Length: 309
Ligand code: GLU
Image (cartoon, rainbow, N blue to C red):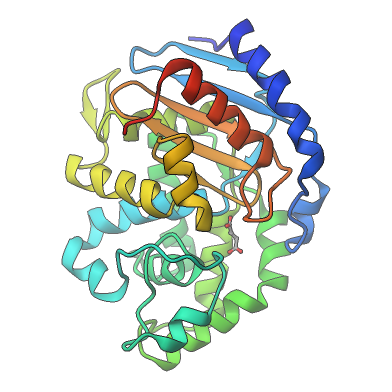
């Protein structure tokens, strides 16, 4: 079913777009610096297959940190709860996503949660498979299934651009390896992690993934369960407590939707039992969230009373 342009959504996009001038595209990954800061698009995917959108939804972007919640779902499916949470915690942190500070003060040096880089690197390290290719392909297959799109691929340029410049993530990996939380070669893990972050899609694909999470892991169109309900619940809880970096508290109060953002400007939203949301707006605020995207979600949540609280 094609996605219908919605005038109502278009109106909210126009109102939110103005905020993009106060943001900045991420350029610490050089390829991401090429994005147009004025882009803003949204798609909403309903469980009955209907879809509405506004803005240019053909624009593609890489998942970046949004991949963390999807990878967590797969690792929990493959490895189970106890195995995964032995090495990564469940507590939010008030620190920026790439901070190393808490690791130094924690004994053992277990990352606080899977949504910060240190925790995500540990989760990615748990992906099953013997080679990077095998592991990334497992993740890609899972993502394609969630999005209902077999054509989703990795943007190799973005992956390389991050791999070549990811010294902070390298530092996190070496720290974790020294403390025996990570047990594999750092460059191999970074190769896998940067590929995971560079999985590319548009906001329609993202909205469909959000819809699956919103329906507790079931694809309502064919009744097939893709994620066990308990794992979907854990992922959505992390989205609420840590999904929007160190702005998650304010986001929960103002918007109240389980969501996960990425530095490419993408936001994945899952409104429980209602619909999935995919947003792309690359101009970011100082915490690393899409500045216009957050505004758009705020307007949407207020207009349609979407807060779960
Ligand atoms: N690949 C990015 C990094 O590790 C993801 C960060 C993000 O989207 O927050 O720095």
